[in-house]
Image 1 (spheres, rainbow, N blue to C red):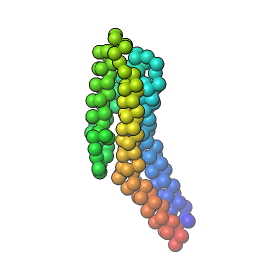
Image 2: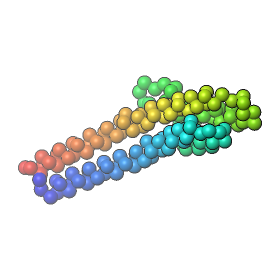
Image 3: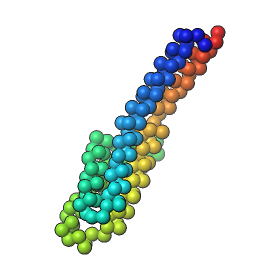
Image 4: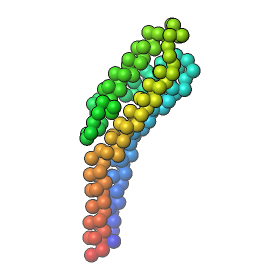
Length: 153
């Protein structure tokens, strides 16, 4: 492989890696942080801790809207509905926190598990099933192949 072909191949590969890391950081890592907060809420031993983690998860989700599932979308992956349900859970807990005995913590913790499942499903659609990611890596492979063929001739 000649030097120019190798340089083109490396530049395209580097751009693909930069894009992938940036996209992962912007979407998947952010939703991992949400899942971390929801997991902490699920394991928290008191209402204040649960509320703190639910509010933090809701705040992290704020910039996200719509449904990342571009195909076969359902309400399960609709981020607006997830945020709305989180808000209802927060309001319920704030309303009932003075009367701690009237809150069924198992129901609250089960809803945290559902939120985690929903966010996990959104992560897949925002990264693995995103057509742009597939196109970029197809481009990287094609350019790498063409560079290799040109370099060999």
